[in-house]
Image (cartoon, rainbow, N blue to C red):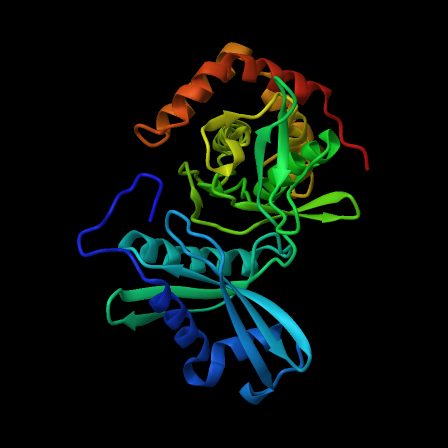
Length: 359
């Protein structure tokens, strides 16, 4: 059920038969009430369960906490896609309940939909597996996982897991990928409170990609938590900038972590990843209003550049060192990040100095 081969007292497993039975019961409960509501919001023109001709349930993958199913609903000659996230283990059920509330909050608070809309949540009791928790949400059709893979000798490549045939991205597309991922996470960051989406992991396939006319488009498919990492007081200018610095440095480090081909050893992305990361971060800041307590004659980006430039490389190294120390005890990525930290800071400062936004 997970990479570490851990098990829980009392099980935590489920048979394929009970998996499909549980998802089927969840979707068809109360004459497909929740599914009908979701179809209505998607403006499918479906008004009653009799309009549904078929519901296909596809088991997509097994994650550490969830076992998502892709749902294809045929109605009035059209097919609509949804996801049912399934949690079997105790910790998985706890996380699923929290994630449903996080996604609901982000959709109610932020106008842009870079995360999936959620429609309903519930539980199904199964004879052998016990309580199965689920939620029904939006499926980003045509979007696929991507991961660092081996390229030419001594080089990295980025592979997109398209079922029609995996393919590699160009260098420009890879830069755009990191740019969009950094933008999305910065877009949802609240400078005044420090609230942010965290944790997130490239290795877990949290971001997915769709190739639209040769240009990658990204979405974030999971939000495990939306909370502040630091306690900020209202109108606390120093806390605001300190919180933003920690967010940015943590973002820059985590953005470079992946697993080779999604399932192999941990891997550190090439320096070029920071070009897109810095640009996406700055574009995310540019989309935000300046907090009321700050200098209204300047933009958030201008104020940020002044704040960041006041830090020396040694000081940034010390802040990053403290961030890494705050990660989970025994985190597998810690040794890899520490080995690359000094070079990372040098490249990061250069990327920040050279990146300019033009509108």
